[in-house]
Image 1: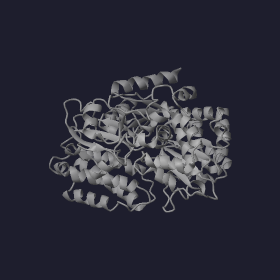
Image 2 (image 1 turned 180 degrees about the horizontal axis):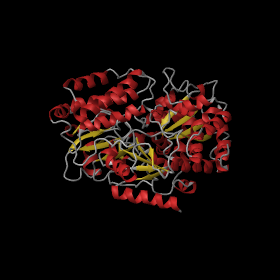
Image 3 (image 1 turned 135 degrees about the horizontal axis):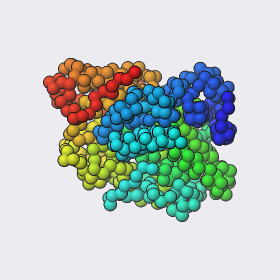
Image 4 (image 1 turned 30 degrees about the vertical axis):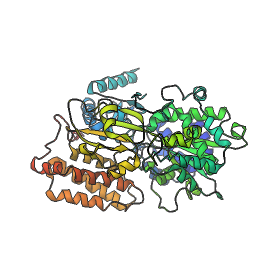
Length: 160
Length: 439
């Protein structure tokens, strides 16, 4: 299992921050997932070995956190918030719009592997609702038209 | 990233440096940065605690417990190391204030963590930031590195002979982890399941050591108290409710945004003046005063002051400062359903009343809103919620039950209307009830 130098540097730096090795687990999993795309069996085995945990212990933690996944996702994970502040300002319409435009439902991925759509809980953008996150980028004060432009931009980005 | 707003009634304490580039250490120092910690280094630990106690600063995460009091519970002597833990797992629906603090003033959080450490005798602190806030953890990691480079962190901070370490830590998506004992579990690399109390974290916390856990806004307020003095801070708000608060105005408002207003500011003014009122000629139906777990207030109940004690007297909670305004085009049953869907999704499953209760309530509300409601459902949902209260390890069960009881009590008519005008007489035109199920 080979990670980037950046990952290795961060990992090496992070582990001594804690009195127990396993404390570095959650952020390490997320960074590993960002590199590989999902938490594959190999990634799980590697991280378990590094932190002196069993694979089962690692899987047990993965299943708790909503951002962690053991299944591949599209290149761009479109996460639309429909929680209360977003809902009253049209968050559901944004989600429905994305579903129609991409032709996929919740947690599904487009055939070209570009987009995954996810209905998510509050992402902390309530005052700028409705909002969505594509991977880690926030997109706020959305309208269906604005969302079209955002998705088109990501598509263009993937073509380059 | 997120737009900043302003209003003449704002009193800028925590948001003083917002929009001024204070994420850069040089700029932060120009704006009185790291002066408070140097002042605190010359103070006795008890003097720091007393100053914070006298400032009437209360926890900004939701519970509103006296910060100075919390610090005083940490034992003076401890065989195990003591820790400070900053809770930046902001995930309460309606709340988006810590995000601005981390973005615009990360050093204030670091400074607050050091001062808390000096007060309780800890020599290291952790700043936990939710996983979705990746860009903020990048900002925070840089701020920490810069502070180390200047000698503000590490060995012999500010040449005082004292050592203090601050580390960054990240989550990966879990509302539950915002609860203090689950937060510690998560930091220890485990599932975020709550711990039974007592012992309280102040006595047995992170890795068994005494731990002070404060919200990011609470800790960012501390340097201002040390510099400006407890009296000044306390007098910004009504008695026992010191200072200001970052109120996150959201929902059906003309000018939503995060505004820093003095504690005890009128809710009515907050909605109609600061927030610009309800747009599109609509009327106010309800307001959730402190994040999704606080019982709603009706349009007749908004003549109150927004401080912990006044909102409690009105039968709700000031909570996390997330004010969600709901206009008369919204259906309360649907609003209750969306709230419950959230708690059902976030319940960690450890305590049965919460795990089963949230699931049953969600299913019942879903059926009810879709037109399959029965008259007895209304009382059943209330009864079920009532029986979740106080029966779980952590307050997530309460957080799901309290707003539900509020919706049923205050908007019973709207529930009953669903029985007569099936499926939903309040449904906004063109709104989508359920997503199409696609293969």
